[in-house]
Picture 1 (cartoon, rainbow, N blue to C red):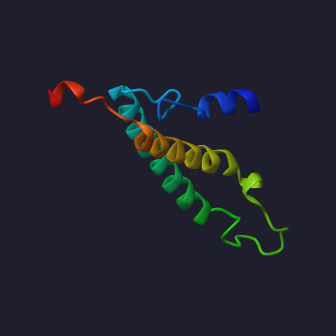
Picture 2: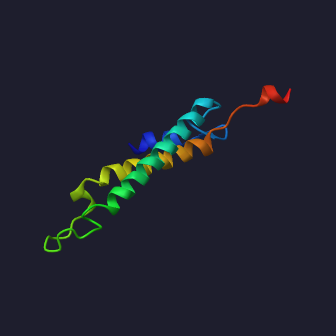
Length: 100
């Protein structure tokens, strides 16, 4: 797994592997950023309305994010947001034909 990650993050001609001059990487970055943001905001509002944050029944033991099922959406939302921003930052388009 680490070998695959190091290969994906290795630089080739000043760019990271997988972020060549393709417009689709910017589109994928925008889509992932928006989806990650929406999932994160939705999960935050669910968290604020869950029994983790609000003591619905004070006699019960304290609950955690995993008890109410919010761990996976929060991790997914943050991962998509960070991956989308990374795609947007690393995507470089070739403008050589515009310069000529």
